[in-house]
Amino acid sequence: MDARKGNIYEILNGNKQFLIPDYQRFYSWDLEQCKRLWGDIVEMQKKGKIGHFVGSIVNIAEQAMPTGVQKYMIIDGQQRMTTLTLLLLALRDYSIANPQDASINSRRIDNMLLKNEYESGDERYKLLLTQTDRDILISLVERKPIPEGTVSRLLNNYNFFMGKIKDKDLPLLKFMSLSENCKL
Image (cartoon, rainbow, N blue to C red; front, side, top):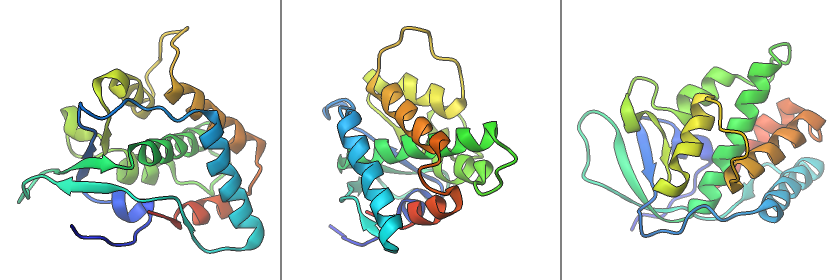
């Protein structure tokens, strides 16, 4: 096993895909964990801290691919990885809805951190959840409508982050530099 420090940008950047094995539980973080993460980010900004350790992501690379998407099976850290993806989705969507606020590059988030830009099918997505949550996450990534009345922690937590970003608890420029320093 190879352990190394990195931030969410370093981990997701490149032609990679992180898979959640079917034997893993579905996404289970609720608003309390998201509030804690958001509070940590706000506290980090207030104290002028450069980085914040959010936990480890344990993964195993599948057979090395000479071309195409390198796949990694997430053994531990699915909840953190999924929650950070929801936060990135909220930042991207806020940026698209508010183009006058140029502090967030929605295309960069979309093409570097959420999608493998030149791939198709399932390989297009950086994170593939278990079947229980997969369609909702893909709909969020692709900005497709989600049927009204759909109950999902993914949606609840995405909406929580959207609300916090809209409230501008943190200046977005500072937030983007801080999110780059969330260590995994």
